Length: 206
Image (cartoon, rainbow, N blue to C red; front, side, top):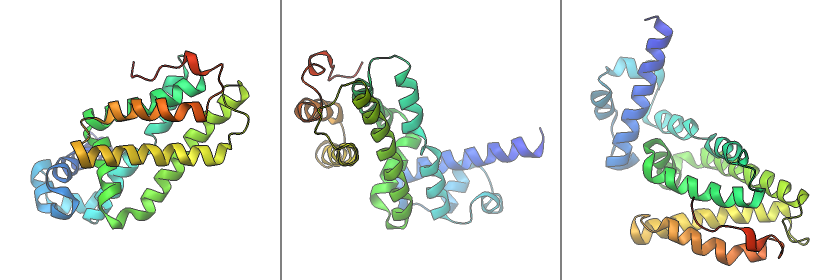
C-alpha cells in the first residue's frame, strides 16, 4: 500500500474514532488519548492529520457538510416535485441522524461547542442554499403560493427544522423526531404551497 492511501485510511480511522468518543463522552469530555487508543494510532500520527481536538471536530462537521446537497440531488431524480423533495429531504436527514454516526455527531457538535460557531454559520448558509434552490424550482413549476418570499421562506424552513430537532432532542432524545416533522409539515405546508399542489403531497417518510 502506498503512503497516500495509508494516510487516507489513518485519517478516516481517526475521524470515526473521534466521532465514537464524542458521541459517548461529548466534545468537552473527550480527550485525544482516548481517540488515539480507539483508532490504534500514536499521538504523533494524530498530529500529522489534526493539530487539536477542535480540528477533529471541524473535520467531522465538514465531512457531512455536503450531505444536504447530495440528498437533494438524489431525491430530485425521482421527479416527484420540488416541494415533495424538500419534505422528503427533511425525513431522510432525520433518518440519517438516527442511523449515521458521523451525521449525528456533527449535528451534536454544532449544538454544544461554542468553538464551532463559525463552522455552524457556514453549515446553516449551505442548508439555506439547498432549501432556497428547491423553493425556486417549486416556484418555477407553480407549486408555491404567489406571495411566498423565497429567501425568508428558506431561512424559516431551516429554522423550523432546527427547532423541531432541538425540541425532540430535549424531550425524547429525538425518538419522536419523525412524528414531529410530520406534524410540522402538515401545519406549515398550507402557508407555503399552492392549493392545487397541496392534495398531492405526502407528509410521511417513504
